[in-house]
Length: 393
Ligand code: PLP
Image (tube, rainbow, N blue to C red; front, side, top):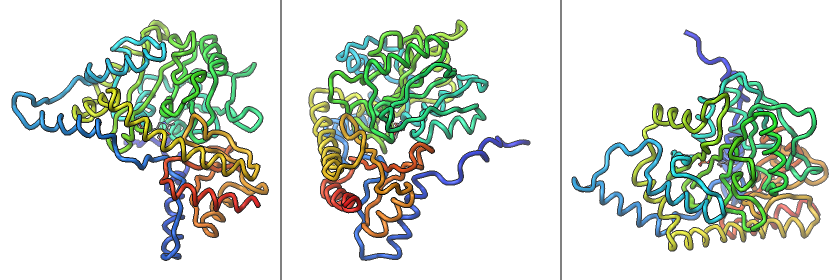
């Protein structure tokens, strides 16, 4: 018996566990010092009342023989898929019900999608980036190359002559940088992918943070995307489902490689290895799109957007180079005095009691940068920013 040796190629420590360990050590050594955390990208506000009500009602249904539901459709209930069709439709993106496959979250889909992709493909991943893209490909022994985000391209790398790829990951609004591709920029990726017969895996987990109507919230707002892209999205950030778990993948019918439909393979993969997202959760997710639910989640999103503004304005007040914070819950900033990311992290934690996420943990181009998140409490955000900017004075 041989285990999958590729797991041994994974980097030892996952970024957030190292951050958590350092914070634990600091707290143990300084039990009376308050720590201001603007690090991990988890939401902090509770689920919207409309979502809770829908889930309570669904629990009640499960309590009675007449309304009880057992196994559901593996690919998601139509009541949720049709809400998603409407949600996209409002932005002018026409989808068919069976182009949307509901899951228990974007992270699962980002990993599981590799089941339908041949290991021989060349995978292109932006750097810095959400670490899971790299790790799932390392586990599968895939050949990975990176494309650099940097200040010159505003952390939005674009295709260039001579670039080669079969599978391309794009995350916009980006985690960790908060950078958001414009329609023209995404069009360049779509044209590149179509010309190479490549697949774009578009991660739209943060689409709900986009308020600028000129910016694309879905890759399918771009002409030509239906023949080269799938979109993976989540209820985690739009509606605080990080602990409740619901996501979905959009696989258009026109997406065909060598005569084989991506939608058909993904359907087959999901119905073979997944038994569907819980009914109660899908009822909660569908309630996000009711008038009341949408109003409530927009209030929550606005709270986070205001936090992002506080962070951004604080950094701007001392002239720090940063990106994100608008149309995104993340702000990505250059460390002071050329400090390395982890050096800055340690100084910020040990001397100022603030926790950021070191940019180097997201890839080599993240060195010299750090990420702050807008998902914190208001008072924590204000105090943390006040302390961060002290380091630039
Ligand atoms: N994609 C990106 C870019 C993320 O930042 C995250 C979570 O932070 C996810 C996907 C995972 O989303 P989910 O909670 O739906 O698994």
